[in-house]
Length: 616
Ligand code: ADP
Ligand code: MG
Image (cartoon, rainbow, N blue to C red):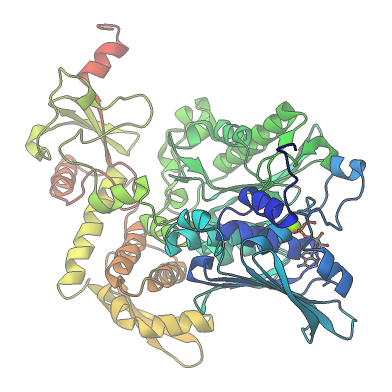
């Protein structure tokens, strides 16, 4: 007798599940895709213990009749494709007919579904791939799927699950990405009975991004003017020059409504940004590509994550052009508010490619935002941003590293790196370049100080000190400022009046949802205090989710305050510049501004010698 056997259906499903169902996040991805394919307008996802104990997805889509409810858990059962031609031009998210049987084979699975005008619904219960019961049930129209005890019958797979927090962060990212892809659908996510977000349906993508990533980020995104090259339409939003992330959690790309990853797209985006992005950083993008479904192959990966383009060059060109056009258009716009761009001498600006001009202050990412993003979009793993935020640059290593051409001086063996923060006496003032960059002669070569960034750092640390000891000085307003808030913001502020007071903002409730502002921090130079107040509230909202870390919240708010306190290109006298340098060098974290940008950049003698060809 031969040795080859056909696998039983149940076993075959478990094998397939190995590819489709990797972790709770993949279950959610498949279920949400099914809900979307079913035309749902609302999708609620509730999970317990990171999705390991329970995942429940509830939709108001078309539902299924009894026959379909039984068939959908069979392998290769799908309503989405019928013929080979269909496979060549997929327009739905699913098509393999493998997800439900795979999931049901590795969990305790319950499906309850009802078609819109059917009298009753159907409930199907399957345990580890074995049908346990089928009966009528009285569900509302739509479909509800519960997946309990994932991998309970495959201990080897269960062992590979990470902590609940990690699994949940993957799961949450999956839901966020789908929510961005489908702003017209209401999404709600609940973890361990706690509502994490609830996003109403909207026609506006920016509105959806605002709901997920906060108003500050959303307001700074640049809109791509929809454009079509070689049959590829590109639209969506991208971060302004300088807005980079250390991971790709916010570099979202979609193809015909499906979240996709393709290294080709990553390269194209980087190329589009060129020098508008720090080396090693990933851009923030909500990029939507549309092509003829026949021009791509989505059937290359069991989880349908990867895609293959028939004409990769066309897609690449379309993306590069769309991104660089959008950035260039942005840089040509007159600078509003506190902007560094305006300080670049006109001649230089004209001769420089637009994206080489330094980003304006309003485009930089406040550290505060990085923190809130870490909670919202990042996994618990420590990212590079976090390390530099929390520990500061390692002071023993080279103080400054220029992003572009300068290798860290410490790399040159002939240049011992300083053992401690240098003192102001170690520098000689040479002059000011472009009203912004203070040129200094240091022991190891040329040092440039970004006057504006340095000032922010100094102010930020001073604010923190003052907050610890009694509070920031504030100035009463002649006419109180009335700010009308959203109800939830109003409650938040009402609970945090004390924090605001320590920040120099005297506020009190004034009936309804109106807030009366009586005093603002003395050093505030903003001419738009209302926007300032709204930003502070945004920061508070971000911070308040970390209930035990109010201290961190204060840092966030302080960052915003500083941004509004420093005006660019104030000409400073030499004595003032020296004082600024002195103040900077005694800071806890002198080498970056509160938003994480460098305050000092050094070009060492070794580097200069290389540049002048004196050594190789
Ligand atoms: P696929 O999505 O690739 O077709 P699945 O195993 O995910 O395969 O689903 C099988 C079938 O079950 C789908 O084709 C669809 O007809 C039906 N189905 C699954 N989920 C839902 C849902 N939430 N609402 C309505 N029908 C659904
Ligand atoms: Mg599916």
